[in-house]
Amino acid sequence: MTVQGAQQLKLPAGVVGGMGITVTIQWPTAGVTLTGTTGITGTKRNLSTGVKTALNGTMTATTAAAFTWKFGSNDVLTAGDYEVQFTASFVLGNIVSAPSPWKVYAAIVV
Image (cartoon, rainbow, N blue to C red; front, side, top):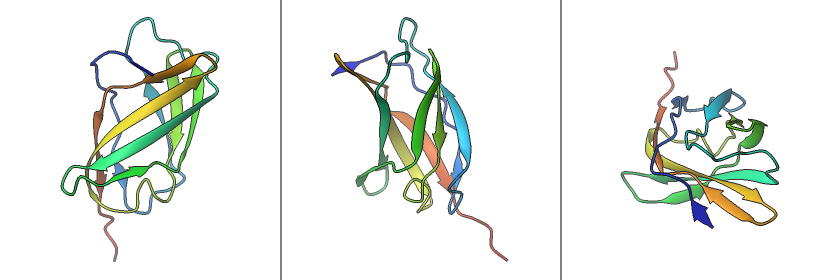
């Protein structure tokens, strides 16, 4: 496993229950290409509790330097402040993003 760069990803916030929303994320590290990835996965850590959970949304490389993340039910289950880290897998190994801040807001329900 190779950790690539200390530059954090810019992650748009989520909203509780907002599964199915797709966001595009730029992989900011120069020289890193997502071309040829066999898959992208992610893990989130709740900054209040320290609990880590796997993201269950769909992540797909769309260009050499970007991927989409379609939020899954687990991804936007609970409001809070998180740290998220993505892993891009390749035949010869993995590239891991720097941990990046992410917020999930509570939904306003009438």
